[in-house]
Length: 232
Image 1: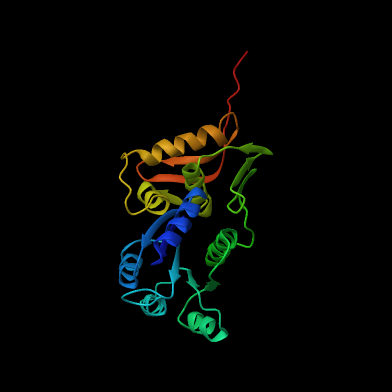
Image 2 (image 1 turned 90 degrees about the vertical axis):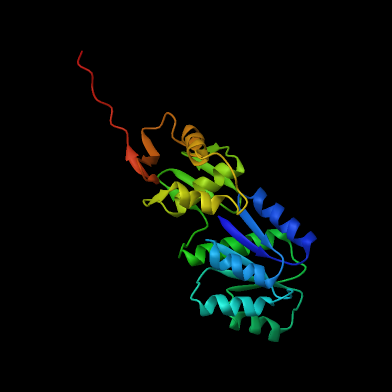
């Protein structure tokens, strides 16, 4: 999942960015309100983490402008202010949630996952397909009771596919949601990661879950491998 982090405290921004990347998120960082507003309107994000006290344009104004442009992406506000009036102002500006500094990273991660589930109307934190389960909070993947070890980027690609299960997603869509703004990699990087995921979850299984849609991209769905009988 791709996140925009707008926070002018560079040290805090680095800590949040590193923590989210370790959990498989792609993170673009902005350090003032104007830059944050520009990126939010020009790039495709799954969620925005927005500090209120920002130079050039405060977070409340950024939030209001995004909502006025009908951008419905989940927005989580960060602030050192803890008064009820401040929280109300933040929510009234169009934010979906509000987290007061200082905070534990685990709480931030849980709130992010809750907002992502809510935006997709997902009742459970677990993403499932057949006998495959992916837990974004615990960062675990299990197929038929067997734990599958994935790298952070493999996990992020599989999470994106499962959040769009039974839908065809292009390589560009995957790249835009799994890698950040500064990504410069091989043209076939998505194919490399999908191939690695297949080896780990589909190998030796009659039910294949990751499928190539030739000329388009990939789809996560259930497909049974048919084995023909051989004449004696």
